[in-house]
Image (spheres, rainbow, N blue to C red):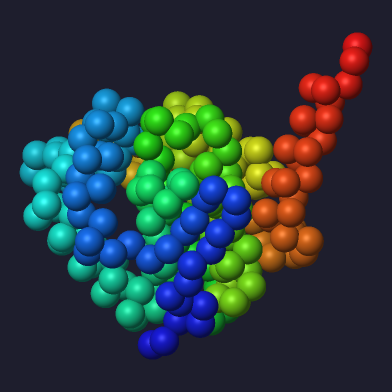
Amino acid sequence: MVLPGWPAVLRDDVVTLRPLRMRDGSAWIDCRRRNVEWLRPWEATPPRGPAMFGTSPSVFTAMTRRLRSEARHGRALPFAVLVDGKFAGQLNVAGLVRGSLDSAHIGYWVDQRVAGRGVMPTSVALAVDHCFGPVGLHRIEVNIRPENVASRRVVEKLGFRLEGTRERFLHISGEWRDHLTYALVRDDVREGLLKRWHDSTSIASSARDTPS
């Protein structure tokens, strides 16, 4: 199945999303090793066998092959996140289902060095606009642990709707963890999610600059 809108390169200012490549391996490994403690609490783990936080070439190769296979079969869009042209994280559109559902979910992580600079809200907005545009989806959801305040802040800034709690939804750090489900449908952001994000940051900036 050829997926409409893939492969794709999406850009906004210093942020670029492009397909994850095998040659990203060394940058991916370096980034993951520097961010082990930053990312470990939120990483999915197998319910059977040891919980391992992968930072090795073999883990990267296996993951990238799997994601590229999913992309070839029209089930995923695996993006590398670049900031000023340098590898800074990942964003995966996965679980893509056509037909009467026309939906997918997004997962992401970012280098702590660029956290708090609007990189991930921009990345998510770029991906959602692409999914609602060229890819032709109807719904996007993001599932986040309640304790992951930084990740929740990303989708809340973008105006995702909180739909409820999925109990014991995903296995993380040795336990089945509850997740909050946030979602958008295409009609929620007819003007574009990236535009909404830019408009909101402009308003916030103007408010800060207004004398009191």
